[in-house]
Image 1 (cartoon, rainbow, N blue to C red):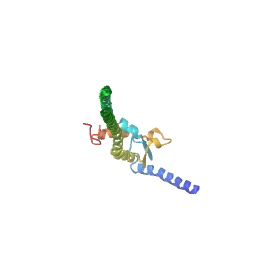
Image 2: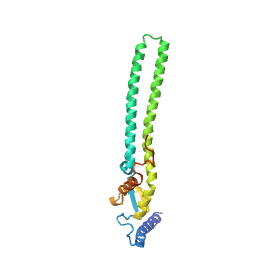
Image 3: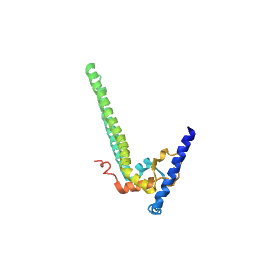
Image 4: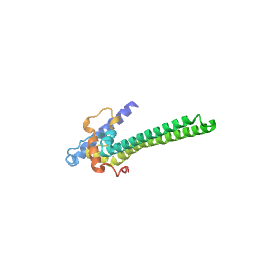
Length: 193
């Protein structure tokens, strides 16, 4: 079984080695001048996202949203602190049943506001993940074009590659082309109002 696997993988590796020279020989290797020629390329999706104009725009929007939520949380906290102080001051003057009803209503309000604010924070985090996925989907034709220009058969996520030479990493080229194609990416995800 092991020898069959070695024979199969050896044949596959040999076939892959033959693919690139044949395509380069068809035009004398001139069509891809300045483009790395490799069967396997790598890309760093996190860098592609974070360093692209689109990713930087989303990061700014998320930071603005996070600051807005934080300011809103501070405002709500101040209002709830005042309301709690007023309720505490009324404790001695209110009927115990009425005080208990007000205290329960206050607790319910606190829990509702906490859920609402947590949901807003989760939505900001989800927006970041949705933006990453949207960029990678939009960038697929660009990655395919880079792959074809390089004579490659695959583009791998750099995080899952154990060893490689830097010259097979196309992240910088991909960022440049994504920026040229999409800019800040209003076509990928609309700008925040």
